[in-house]
Length: 138
Image 1 (cartoon, rainbow, N blue to C red):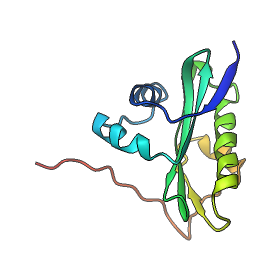
Image 2 (cartoon, rainbow, N blue to C red; image 1 turned 45 degrees about the horizontal axis):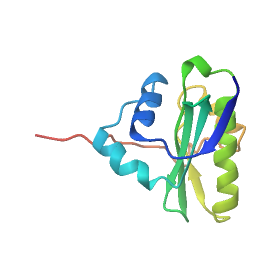
Image 3 (cartoon, helix red, strand yellow; image 1 turned 135 degrees about the vertical axis):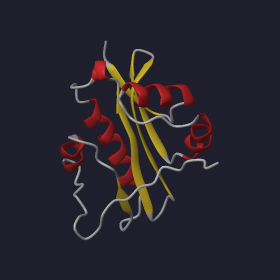
């Protein structure tokens, strides 16, 4: 069975499932319900009618964009799906983002090799990526 890529934001269940099986950290249901509708652009990779991959672009729609949530079901990895997802996301950015927009991403492990093929470079030593996961304090 072949794969198809469609421009669609994943629903909460698909998003949570693909993050979990691909090894990405979980997100709260509340966070997913609030965040997913704010997606600027997203794609799903379908195998038949089942989503086996996804990727999203978030940001302010003009000055700053972030590529995030690239996930492919391990049973379907090694078939160029990550590259196909990135190709779709980059095509959208090339059509929609202003010339001086800043596009960032966090590269986990060997994903840096995939992202380099699309022109992404490490920002160190001039900059360093930083993150904080919000937690509820008692």
